[in-house]
Amino acid sequence: MQKRVNGNTDGIKDAVLERIAGIYDMKQGQYEFASHELIAEICALTGIIKREISVYIARDGSVADVSVGDSGRVSMPSMRLVRNDDRLCGVRCLHTHPNGDGRLSGVDLGTLRSMMLDAMASVGVKEDGTATSMYAAYVGEMADNERQALVYGPMRPYKLPQRQLIQEIYIADDRLKSSTKDTRDDVPERAVLVGLENDEDYDTIEELAQLAKTAGANVVARSVQKRRTPDNATYIGSGKVDELSLLASETQADLFIFDDELTGTQLRNLETRLGVHTIDRTALILDIFAQRAQSREGRLQVELAQMKYNLTRLTGQGTALSRLGGGIGTRGPGEKKLEIDRRRIRRRIFELGEELKEVEKQRGLRRERREKNTMPLVALVGYTNAGKSTFLNSVSDAGVLAEDKLFATLDPVVRQITLPDGMDILLSDTVGFINKLPHDLIEAFKSTLEEAANADIILHVVDISSDHYQAEMRVVEDVIASLGAADIPRINVYNKIDLIDVRPKGTADDAFVSAATGEGMQALLNRIEHMLSAAHNRIEIAVPYDKYEAVAILHNEAKIISEEHTEQGALITAMVEENTMRKLKKLLGESIRTNEE
Image (cartoon, rainbow, N blue to C red; front, side, top):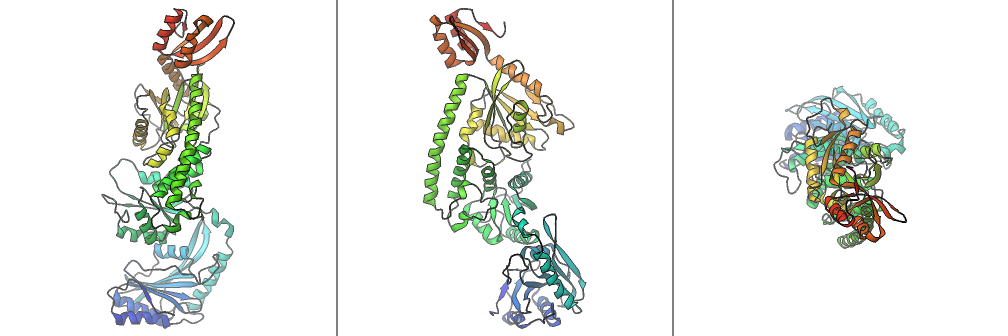
């Protein structure tokens, strides 16, 4: 066996390194957890170098690895001497704590569970190299989808219950073996959220946690770095990366999610140094969209956004884009092929663009047909999870999925509803917006979002129960402006008033409702009808056949509600603007009945 001392050996004298390497020769007996000689030697060496020493011992008593770390951190390489994944790895770890405290840290217990060690033991060491107390931990039972740890101690380092400590390894192995293996795939990924502190009045990390939950992850920790600007190499800086590496061990994390979009270099560096799958906010949102998209158009749009995202992150990633193991950030139609390169991605982007052009053409034809039917269009827009789908379901039989999750629904839905005084309108539910919505996703969904740009009225649905509803409103307003829809008449609909105690002061243009309970909904529908009637004259007109050009004007410029042909001519009910009204009066005289009459 190669007697190599791993970890941080900088500044350690050769003679001391040789002595540390000699630990490889210290074989333990069959029923010896850690011999008196081994404990004395690692404590003495710790006193000399003032750093932790970690020793991995195989079940036959041989030393499999020796590592040196800085104070507060020891390098613990991944080791497995037992092939079966449903068994303990076959090695136990004994390491020192130079601060004199022998208690196991959270990192120690996390490493025990994540690496499935036979045991994790620590011994406190004073400055003079003498041992204080010792603790040992073993893999325990499952509780709340989390593997527990059984801790023994404090124990006297030189009066250990050796046989009992060895026996506990086999008990833990049997305990793990008897656990239900089939549930392993159902356990959610354990995610750590990472972001930079900013001066915004919006908690983006909390929103990231909601996104992670929506994607199916279990958030086990959050870390916010105080930094003015992101680090070009690692986003958070080298020191913070080292902290996160320890946090990954402590929390048994198998996924890091960063709150901003990372460059290909940052992703590559972070994943290499953390040793854990790493994604950014954009990849997380794309993953959620991939799960939620049901229609052909939605799937094409998501795949296009994924391909554009991946194109700039190819260099140096090798087969990273071809993972078939599943998990957050790896799902969706854009991740089906194995060996994917820049040329093939560009080809696929072109193909998707052509397919979307055809779909958009079909959407345009449907829109034209709706315009010919000339029913007013009212568009629901708002931040994700503001309650748009619940609103649509409450006024129609849309049957749209409405969950307390971000992006619960993705594909747009248009439903015809009848307002209280009998006016028929089309109500369109668009995709929800979110802070830092990926640019490629906005571009991909632009044709879908254009439903709002072509609306007669926009209902901006706001979750009034959110602590950050004002910041969320600004995000939506920015997207509306980018679509060229800022001048369309709008009603701010403050939803979920049943969840707040005090209603904020609003303007005359605001509406306060609860789509879930129905409170305020009738008044809002009346107001929508009044606004549409004010913008258009509702007319009932009989057009004789010799004045048929009036029918052409109505078809081109008005919103026709009903049309019936008789022997005398056409009986038409329509919504017309003032300019169109003047043209009709010039042709037909004053024989036009309006909604005011």
